[in-house]
Image (cartoon, rainbow, N blue to C red; front, side, top):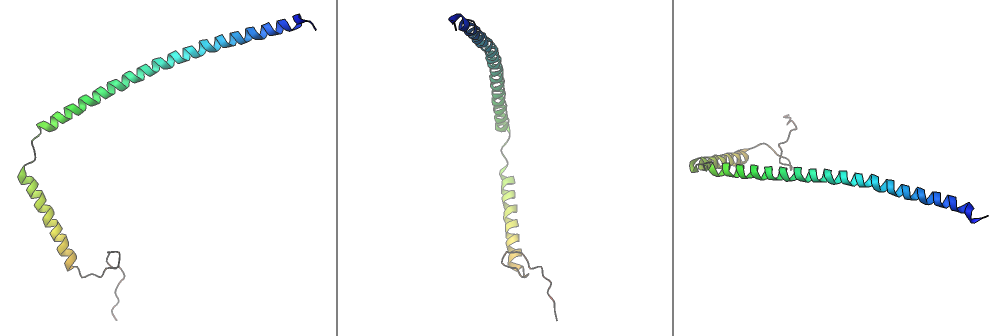
Length: 114
């Protein structure tokens, strides 16, 4: 076997490898460029959304600052109503004569009187 017998297949393989590398490089360079562009767009959108959220938060804080504080009488009336409710619940619980089991619920079995 002569060396010329091996030269043509080796050159063909080297050329095919070089063309494959070039095609892969071209293809994936395009893909990377497209992904970089997409990433830039996503970053811009995220930045715009963050700025909008900050503006909305500032606007809401300004609106809350302009809103009048609740009147003291309303807060006192609400506290008094809650206290009356708690006292009523305690009174009902204290005066409740229904038998309760260990769970705190009233017994539901009927009492049969003979």
